[in-house]
Length: 290
Image 1: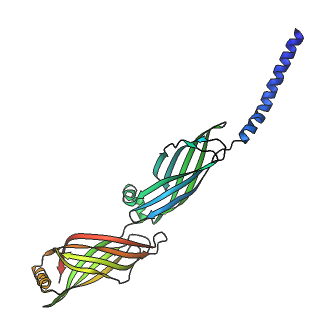
Image 2 (image 1 turned 180 degrees about the horizontal axis):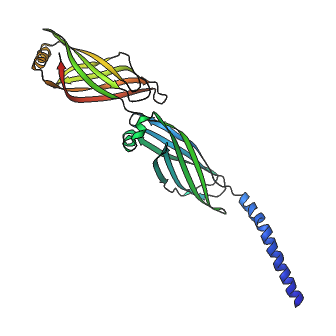
Image 3 (image 1 turned 180 degrees about the vertical axis):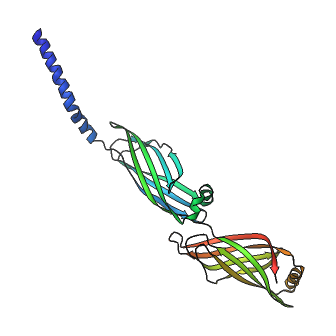
């Protein structure tokens, strides 16, 4: 009886030692046949850039390298512009990721400049800002249980400021019975840190509900950073009715109502915005200068 108890005790101790020393070796072969998902990103891809906004896509790939499907991870991502946390969101669950599959996750990113500058005025003073995108992936995996992967993408985003078009003056330069000539001066205010090359202006000018002019000018105008460039336009009125109306307006010395609209066709020295079109429409009142 004593011998039997000794044998049981010996077997118990032996099994205990086997379990203690061999459990890790028992798990490792199982874990070695199951691979944790691989998560990568190429960063933020800008798909559209205007003076109104930046539109982009954050491309992420989740690789399931196993022969069984896994649950889609809980995904939380954030975007920082410099030290400013601009956005933080969670991505909806998409169910399962199939075996031996690369799941491509495309997260749209939109940054409207007007909204951005209202909330963070300091960004109006820079031409570009470093960005950091962080995405955390919380998986529930067979064998491993909970597992977390993270990816970080960095780069630089341009901070564009919309140029401002103004109608500065309307000045009479010549009055004759058959013709009245005006010099109209518009301007372009460049609020950015790069040169703007104005190559063409399409325009129309309505004064007191009468169309005075419609046409274009191809004068080359260079507007340096944080400066204003004048856009001179010469307008000649030749029909008898328009000449008479112009005489009356000038002699009345009263403000006239104007509707000045068109499109500027520009190039720039910015690496982000090589060329652009800038539509404009200005409505207001102005005194004709003599």
